Length: 66
Image 1 (cartoon, rainbow, N blue to C red):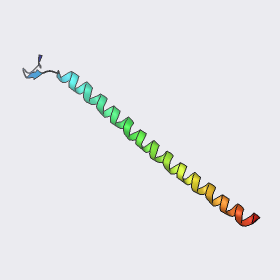
Image 2: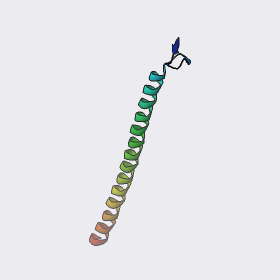
Image 3: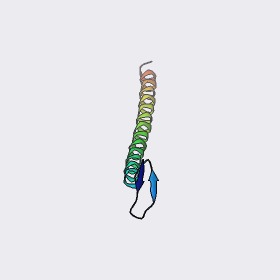
Image 4: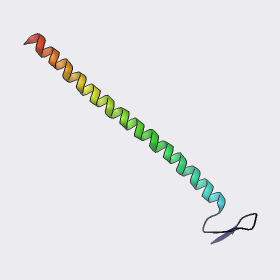
């Protein structure tokens, strides 16, 4: 497939509009992936903090009742 731009350049396979649209979609997907990575990292931090907190409280309970 060949597409000609307004200035006469020949593109093979994709028009410039298709390339720009594809690049916009890729950038949007990259932003979503970055957000997902941050959310997963926060979730891991909260889980670790919760487990540490529960263990710490368990130690205090053992000190009080034993």
